[in-house]
Image 1 (cartoon, helix red, strand yellow):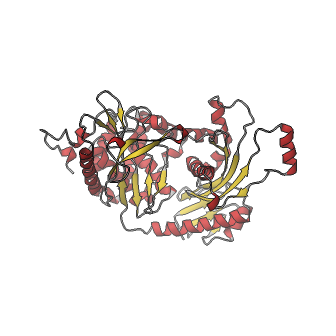
Image 2 (cartoon, rainbow, N blue to C red):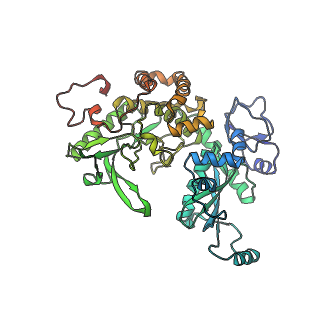
Image 3 (tube, rainbow, N blue to C red):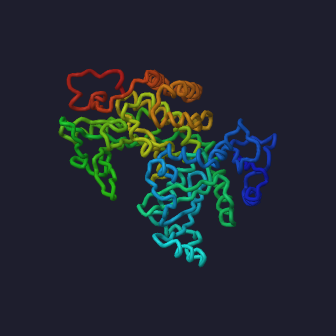
Length: 489
């Protein structure tokens, strides 16, 4: 067995232990050679030499409501405290249309309970209804009855658990009359009824099966991507991509949702063929750039990459992963060993997309069975940066079990990430890179990664207002210019 449930004989833990198929107890057996310790509660000893699911430090931090809300706000997750700080709360007693309790285990929603609230009634009427038991209970929401608010509450709950450094818990969500969603509470060691006990036990067993399969995976991860870019006229005006492109295809346009759920299609998007070889993926990306050049005949339009080259138009450089397991360990490795180093060379305006976009651990499941990692800005400023990102993503995905550091679990490092504090992160990134250099697969991409490391160490920001076609020698910048070593693909 690869995992072990460690507890202090709490009632819920003992009930779980009676249902799960992995070993459990109050201490690890001396001869246990597994990989992951699943903590239930914080009343037992920690085992720092073992990787953890639900670290004790994260449990204690989540129980302190002020620290919890501060960290959630850092990730762009709304709480009552954050609304008060912004002056958006006039009445201490907020009215909600709905409340939800969402049970989460390892990036998955296990069950959602809903409570419909009574609004805009007199205090006397509310008291009478409470005494009569009206709207006083939470009821299970079955998947076929999941409304927009239920789905949104589920997403916010998973996001909140991850943001707090947790791996499971019970999250209470409130929906305001305006439609805004607030995280009201996060219980990292929830009380379990019979249904929840069964669901958590099943989730633990599924985790063990997936873990055992993943640690024995021999095939290399399949990488894909869909980086976005913006078209800018010589007069400095954004030209919407749907003027030239359709939504489908290797080169298409992507949407931005405005207030009132209004949809616009200003962003261009490249969708190269995936590959297990980062070098081939770069060549495939270049091929889509040439397709885009033919589809967008107006050569006077600048192609802009980065995070926020123009205010109000955030760009992403999503990396797609398949043939591997979507799990919190991999996401945290990508956050620490890929997103964190990229901060050192981001443009001055890139940070403006965070935290609404670019928050840590941002992922989306894909229909092909894999997932996309959505935290990164668009990284197409140069072939070197692109190849470095692809090579690093592949290296991490195939070796993340032996990448030990998680500096982003420290609040000051996490805060430095969100504000783009390069000098605070410089030493942290240097230590992370030493871990990467020790990996057996590093030498495969050493030529690219060593140059990428030098670029990162320079801390020279990319210029988000520079047309990235110049670096890639895409028309009209392919004329009368020699092919430089930097773009030999």
